[in-house]
Image 1: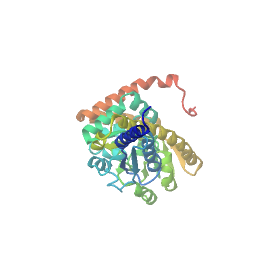
Image 2: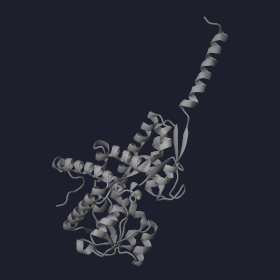
Image 3: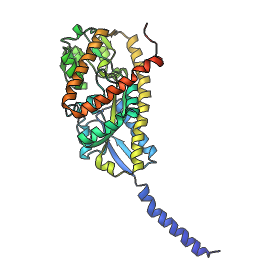
Length: 353
């Protein structure tokens, strides 16, 4: 038996070694998370969920402090905020960078594009997430991957009844991004304005109609109180994704396990957001149906025209942009593969007679 003082010395030495190693293994990272959101589900639910998942899955090694839009930089230039290192992380919408590269529309969601469920399948089984990450790094110098799912939007809150292409022509429409281009080609008079200005513009007749988000997102805006008609379905934005971005230097500090934690936290947040938003949309739309607004469904011929014009727009963009062509080819192949889906899958909800 070893003398007690030798055992004690060994124990102290082991404790000292463990103490010197532990801080290196469990060094905590406290990172700032920029967002464009001033409030609502995307800030208070989705962005915060991602931050919470990262902390939990990393066993507290990585902690993210979520900041509302405009706190760490321009709300519409979050990518620049992350690329410069002002914030190490973000929860963002890729389409805000549409002006720099129209490929953003395909990856974030655009007219006659993928539904929320199709986006998840394409991202995680069809190679979409890999393309997303490669595009963001090559063209913008940030690490990024899908982080939330966007539901199908309301086509319009409108003071003018819109069902056909003729109804749409000349419509003074608030919109943005790719749909602003395509809607203009279809004859609408498009106006770009901040979300905070839409309610007043509708109320005063400055615009005839506006598109914004899904039923859940539109509910607190009050658009339904100043626009008589609710036009569906939202073929201009059938689904989409929000993203989480990481500064490339901050990303380089992470080990492989921590990088995997970030990706898995984002994937978990995508699933959580799909569940929460889909269920919230049901209640929000039910309130619209039971309220004073008139629900108007687009004429199938107009929907088909939107699809045709979008395809023509896509083909034009693909001619001049290699990334656009690459992502478009992947999505079109996926949509072709999905053609057999209705043959063996039942319709969710009540099918139309």
